[in-house]
Length: 377
Image (tube, rainbow, N blue to C red):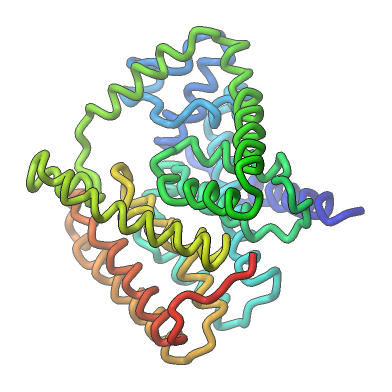
């Protein structure tokens, strides 16, 4: 039995165990209900999956259709069970991703303790799980994409890895740094033919993911456009520099944000091309909450993979101390304002990615003179 089959068997057993162990509530996770299960439920009865006034609540599905198409079968399940499966997939996928970050080696006991402690104490994680959000699964898929231990031919990306790219784009605002890096590295290693082959594979898989929408409700696209317009016009107070600068300075704030985005993009592309896919992916994920125009505090889980990778691979005592105590300080600064304050706006957390990335950068300085460890991938 090859490693692919063994991996899928282990994940299937872990998923089944998690579904049985994770306690259920009478409620269905909020965002998951509105973005996956609710549209899938409508789809399976022949109704439009994207509606401005769906029966399951006042909020409309903002996630892109491939995640609904591949999960359309969830519409035949009760929402509490579908939400339990979703949470199990996220936790197992991310846990397996952390294992891959350590090159499939067993971490030291103190590293396991720190990883688990910092995961469950991460302030945005509570809302992420309560809402049934997508970002943790996105981070897991991106880790699997570049840290996968499965060997494949150098001239192509297998369909199951290309599928991760397609599904990750269900929230395109999370891809603004990572996907340009993937394309740039593909071009560097395989030329334009490699880029076209990757894009063609992704388009083919996207069509397969959208097939259930066309089969159950062929006119779904117009509703999708209406919902996207509705959400973009909603004017949420989001913890991104794009939104916060716009709130403070109006249209001028966009011109303040643009150089920040371009700097983050340049750093990400440099790391992808010079240091390899793994370093590029980790820093690209961490920089995304700073660069993207649209994100919420629960999307800050994208900061964790870089922190974990540094914790697992850095050998300097000083760099580890900077990581641990710097992250503890960032955690405390997030937790203290929440104590007794139920009116804390999500937009007030805009500083969290800046501080966390600064901690990772400072730890890199302590680790070695060449800030970013070379990666041969």
